[in-house]
Image 1 (cartoon, helix red, strand yellow):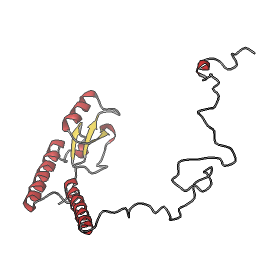
Image 2 (spheres, rainbow, N blue to C red):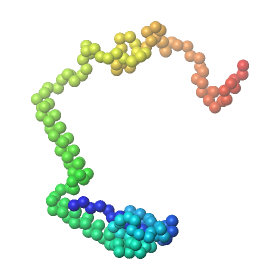
Image 3 (tube, rainbow, N blue to C red):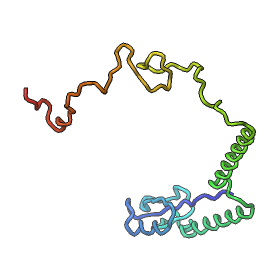
Image 4 (cartoon, rainbow, N blue to C red):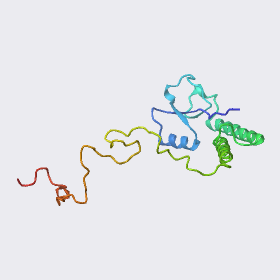
Length: 183
């Protein structure tokens, strides 16, 4: 049993709904399609209910209140049927969550069974003797991917503990226009 939300046509007298029309639509508490009643001479589209300034062509259609009452009755019947059968509705979030939890629990149980008799070891660590991919450009010779130290082999390393300090940090130039210093 598939229940779809009713299509309600709300007819207005003019191109734009008045404030009273908007309040009436808000009170229906469902999605509504506005139609200009001045341009309706025959049934142009099917609907489940009508409201507002209903033209003569749609006079035999149920009102929006009647259509919503039928819809709510169908929803209640569907919910009662689901409770009879038991469990969550097919495709519902609750059902999917239960399936995911069961699958995850099965994976964890499988891992526990597989590792129950295993002694803890360092076999999961990378083998230092196994060759790896070379590091990217600019890496030190002999470096492997994952090394964080990058050096240029053609230049001697800089000892920052003995490097002379110039004393200028550049902070004094912040906010000054370019070229403000005297020459």
